[in-house]
Length: 325
Image (cartoon, rainbow, N blue to C red; front, side, top):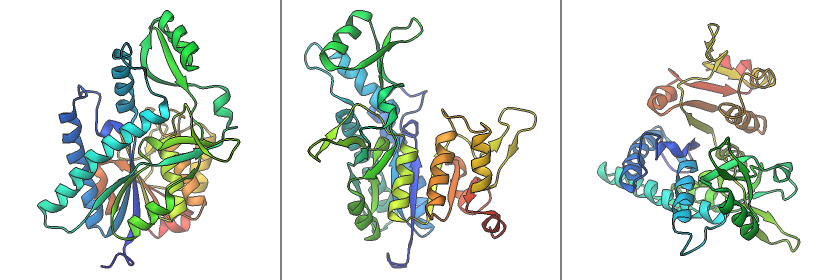
C-alpha cells in the first residue's frame, strides 16, 4: 500500500507510559518502556496507518526539575520551555531508537523521526492570570522566596509539605512546525512530535516567538495536530480500557460508542472530571467537531482488540456513525 493511500493516525499517551509510578526513574527503565511502546505503535502501523506520536512528559520534567535543584549551587534551573524541550528531545530519541529497532527486527523498511515542536498559546489566555499547575520539587520557604525574586516564579505553599512552583496551562492555538510534521508523516515516516504538549511559546510585541512558563495539556495539543493535519484516527491511550459513566458507582456503565452530542451532555453533567477523563473527552469532541472522523480511547493492553472494534470507546460524530460501526 503506497503512502498516498495509507490512512493517518495520531496516538497520544502519557509520560507515565515511559516512567510509571513504580519505576525509580532510571534511563534503563525508560528505554525498556520505550521498547514496549514501540511494539504497540508498530501494531498500528501494521494495520495500515502512517503514525504521529504525541507523548506526555510530566514525570520526566518533574525529575529534571529535581535534578536541577540538586545542582543549583553550580548552575541555576532552566525555565519550563527549556525543560520541556530537553525532555521532548530525550524521550523522542528513546522512542525513535526503539521504533527503528523494532522495524529492523522484522525487516520492515520504516523510519522514525522526532520533531521538537513549539506550540503557540495566547499570551492573554486567562490561565496566565492564575497559574495552578504544580511542577517540580518542594522547596523551603526561604528557597521559595529566593526563586520568586530571582526567577519571577509563582510559588504556593502545599499543605505543610513545602513550597512548590505553579505554572499556567493555557490552551494551544497553533503548532509551529505542523507542515513539517504533515510532510514527514505523508512521506511515510513515523513522526514523534509535540512531546509533553509541545514547547509553550507566545508571540511577543514584535511578532516573534518567546518561551513562557507554562505546560500544555498533551491531549489538547494532540487534538490540534489531528485537526490541522487531518488524521483519520485519533487514538488516546489512558489507564482504562473503556470510558464509562457513573464511574465508581453501582450504576457504572461502559460506553463502547459515544456520539459527540452525548459526550458534550455528559461533560456538562460533570461525568468526566477535569483532572482525569475531562481533557481527553474535550480533546476528542474538538477533533470530531472540526471534521475529524473517529477517536478511539482505550488502554495499551486493549489497543489491538480496540482497533478491531472489540474493546475501547469510539467517539463519533452522531448516532448514524455509531450504528455503522
